[in-house]
Image (cartoon, rainbow, N blue to C red; front, side, top):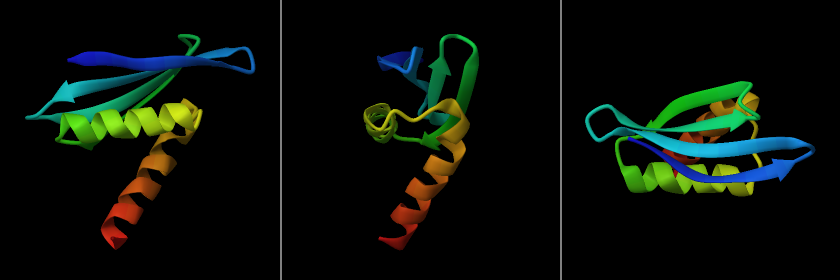
Length: 81
């Protein structure tokens, strides 16, 4: 499964946000910039959680190069709760 969450235009770049995967392998978030730059990472085995993370990343205009550190921060915050 791969589902587009949305896209935004920022500084001449088109950012597209996707959720992909399955319950068995986990769901991840993928961000593409003008079809040139891409990053993806498994974030959860729950589709709802992956969708929520992708939407937060979109609202924050996160670029692919920052995905891994942002996800690491999310996981740290979740572990400290």
